[in-house]
Image (cartoon, rainbow, N blue to C red; front, side, top):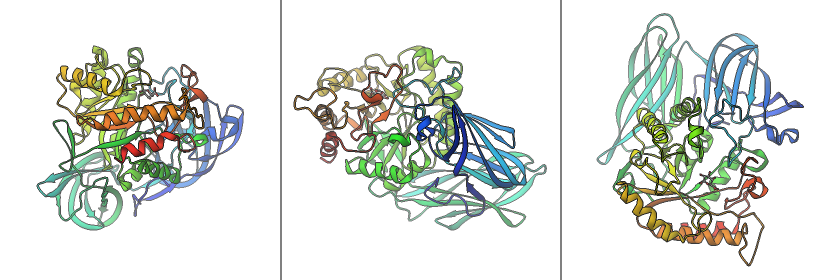
Length: 545
Ligand code: ADA
């Protein structure tokens, strides 16, 4: 299963799951797709290359849509190289023409921290290996729909929306096509489109939408929006998306959702589930959201990379507002000067927005968590990436999580100022005092009139480690620190959101994170099995006040 709804009724699609052949290190055997290869005991600590093989029957113009391969994929069909893709966390696709029949797909996967990799590096989370999200094989007609992007707008008490429909004509002659647009399965617009030979073109339409319910965490109303393409009077292709009507605006220090102040109470979440790693089944994602909601949350930050579309579908459905973040964590200036850094970062942003634009739950785009935002070179990187986001989607605010209080020189580039702070954990200062300093320093930079989010706050505990003396790593110490941190943050009227670091414990690299007990980041309020620590109840009490 790759989405919570059908994206096609006409186009033939097939999820290429099941068991594949895998050769990796000394392992020769079979593996499920999707999954992380760490689920195979012999590969539990394997970093390197793996070759996947399987046979499928298809023919004609064929598209392979990979939702996520960790982290580099080289794809071949019947021995012919098709595409190479970098980054575990964004979807990509490639088209081929094949005779109808059985074909071998081979994917060479690499999860090593090779010199070519600027974003997947030794880190405070783990880069698992394998085809970690579904692969879809689609049979395409000669003229087909590439993308349907929907941007809602609030007009007084009603709604309108812009629909950007991208169509590809692979034929050598120009053609005239007809497109029907359907809202909630009812056709509301029909247009003739002229397509040049061999071209991809975007057509924009706008429409009023009457009697729709606005989208909010309390009432996450979703609607289907579909396009059917007719060639020569016959339906040839279709694409169905799911949309919501909501407006995100910044007004002074507030984030407004449909004109009302939005108070974000959320979690940072890594896609990590004990031995399943980053390839999490629907029911486990659903449980994560149920636990977050039980703790009183209405938001999640996809720290530090774009998430599985299925998780975003669940957030849409269950009313969890999402800060979606492009991939990067705590890169030094030297790491940001890596020759591949800009290309790999821009590609991640392009793919994130191309595939995730329509999710109404995504309220902002984030980039470059805790990277170098206090030097002129670092600033130029932030500037370029924000410019790229603005060019692709101007409808959502932009932010990044900084930890450079007193030094950051990028706050003028954002719509929302966000800081990661760890009072009483990394710095022995009461939270309220740290907040006062932070706010007055932000004021002094001229950015005090923007909304302020505390994007990380937290403390570590090993599940089951109990101590009356509140020893370091005990559940008692974590709960006590979170109580102080969250009380101060949620009592502060100048702060419009907080994201606890973090929802669940996650595996980390042994490199310079060797000091982390169990080689995990243990700041979860649930552990890697989702067993609740004492802090779960503390967060729940404060979030539910
Ligand atoms: C940072 C970082 C997180 C995590 C956290 C911690 O703020 O953004 O990824 O490493 O610190 O646990 O120290």
